[in-house]
Amino acid sequence: MSNIEIEDLWLDSLAQEMSDMNHAAFGYKTLRNLSRYETQRRMKSVDYQACGAFINGRLQGFLFIVYHPKEFLESPDELYIQDFSVWPWAQGKGIGSALLNHVLNTVGKDRPIYLTVERNNKAVRLYRKFGFVEVEAPTLIRGNSYIAMRLGRSHGKSSRKFGTEDSETLAKAC
Image (tube, rainbow, N blue to C red):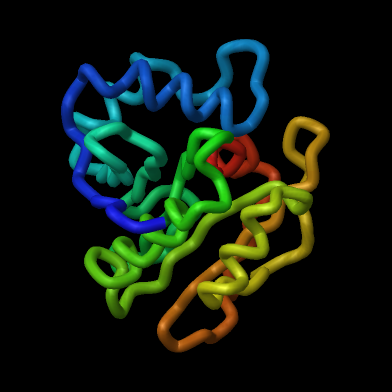
């Protein structure tokens, strides 16, 4: 799809739309991980960067990048893609690819990048297309099978294990 513009997101006024998009993208019927309040908190935090994909001035997709080491990141050089969402009617039109290209060519340049995703999520194909590989066996989170994926410029395998103690944190991804 042409005319996709990628911008940093920082306006509180977009928080409700981002929360709604996240819930629609994953078919959540009730409030889950990404509430309007949580979205606003992240947009103001130095730990996160939000990137959005716009077409004709309308937000079509977004993702959060986690910067500072958390319990599942080994070093400050690593990034984690969290809460990657595209409106259901806009999926399959290059919006997710545009967002990933932006991250890989700007903030993620020459840095290892991690994410987690449900094994049966159709986005797994997109991540593999970009060079993400599984770094461990599936983990059950809330009854769903999640996989951890890594894109590192060295493409080496991490020694880290995304253990069950990290499950709640990792469940918020994608």
